[in-house]
Image (cartoon, rainbow, N blue to C red):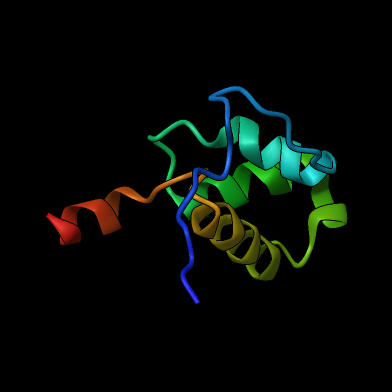
Length: 80
């Protein structure tokens, strides 16, 4: 059986539905903040509602990374 590779998204513009925590995280991803800084900002914004942020955030970022929606600068440097 042959599997064909195709782009996941036919357009560069697409919509993703996120909850308020996902949206808040997405807004903080700017290429400069480190993961722990994003966690700190989320705690400031959402307080106890975001807990356990140090469990939730890595899972969310991993999902975004696996779907090629974000990259990590540290991983990019190691790959070069």
